[in-house]
Amino acid sequence: MFPSTVTILSFICLSIVIFMIPLLIANKFGTALETTLIIIILVYLFMSYEYMDAMMIFSLATTTYANMGLFLNKDKHNMRHSLKRDLANVDHIEIDQERDVRRIIVDLLLTVAVSGGAIAFLLLAPPTYAVLKFLIGISLITITTQMIARIGNYATTSMYWIREGEEERLVIISAFESRDFPIHDLEQVTVESAPDILRLHPLFTFLSQTQDYTSAYQPVLRLEFPGENIFMTPTNIQTWQELFGQYLTDDQGEQALDVLPFWHPTHLKRLAWKGYFAITVKGISAYTGLLLILVWLDVPSYMMIIFILCWWLFNLYISDRVLIQSTDATEITEGDLYDRVRTLCERAQIPQLKLYLIDSPVHNGLATGMNIGRGTVMLTTATTQLSMKAIEAILAHEIIHVKKRDILTNQIARMLFFFVIGISVYIFYDQFILLSKNLLVFIGLFYVLMLLFPIYLSFVAQFTEMRADYLGAKLLDGGQEQMALGLNELGKAQDKEQAKTVQYSMPDAKPLKKTSNVERDGWFFRVIEFQFQLHPPLYYRIYSLNSDNTWEETIYQWLKARFTESFPDLFGRNSKYI
Image 1 (cartoon, rainbow, N blue to C red):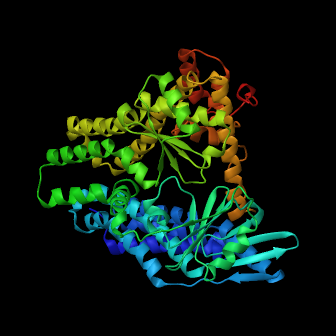
Image 2: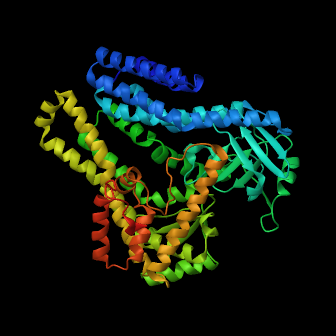
């Protein structure tokens, strides 16, 4: 059985209240009160409900608590109050903004539309699907907290222009996403004729780092800073466009962009693809909606599995087109980058790939398509600002992913994991029934599988990454040295990007990660990098490329490192990776 909606909502609200206590009472008493309430609620929960129900409620409540921490934490709370104190001590000009409630209503309606299938399944599916309902609940909590943050930004954001001595700053104060931008970091100013909803809504975007402060349907001012793009709707937009434009160099300049409504006939194709991306990738409405229809039609279980598998294969087949549309990528068909991709493809002995550019301040590149004929390589605009040798290294790496069909390999690995579990349950069904009577053991097994799944995916994905580095280097004039230097430059660019993001949003926050992406970190972070992430840590990939090993030696050393690098340095720091 799945706990009642009222019960779940009650405990979710309690988790929010508990989260707010240390923010409202910022002293030892607040921390003690938070800890005491958590203990009391846990005791009540496991004494008043069956173990399975208690675990589901506990998991949903802790997920809510964790998601609240993403946009409302002590660092952001301190940032907001620090900026307010600054404003009281310096001369400033407030940037007026008009608020039109239709703007936020559209965002909310799109969220409900994308989540409709999941909500319907949660409310209408039989109790026998309790586990799936639980997973849907986790997904909906994440989406809901994103919308709470969006509503908070819409309702509470105020913007100020500060000139303090020779330094100019743009200060944004919001309940959830306050920012402090030094204007000398400004890279580009663009005026868009209206908010581009399909580019701004978090459920319709991918590989994008934007902050949406738009509050009305009027021209939008887009400001590009390292690692982050800001969208705002000031009332007197021309005045602010001219002011910000003074801080750009001649080669940066200003741009104007005409944006049509997302429901405009010329945007219907874009809306369809982005909507499909939202319900299949960002949300789970597509699969849950299909499953609810099959349940309503009383379709046999084996037919449900066949339907879901067929839809998964279809999604895999069109994955390249979905990602292209979801990122609003533009195809490159000429120029230096295009010629270099053609040369690398000839060396890799594969047909010419399509090359796309994603408008994003994030340094990254990716390959899409489940086979060579549908292969596509995508780069962000930030990545194209690196040196050409580094760009070539990234392109060579992604081309090997396409040649070796790594996108398909990773998807098959995912399905294989669930297939093995399904077959095991079918073969050992009686044993699982007996095991389920011991709920403690059953829940323990469930969490072990949840832990093994990302470790297993990490193993497969990291193998493909090491192979793409090694074979990609063979396509380059500079070989493994060029690949290593390219990864090093990419990692340092990501370091700078991350540092700027922290500087803008939480300058006084204590960093969780003390070293850079290209340096060997402490034991805890190495465990996460080697055992749970899809890419091996950059410091190890660079070390491996500089070792000049054969492929067999490379893969053996990587397998060994996954084990040895996941242990503390009990006898001093292992310097060979530095």
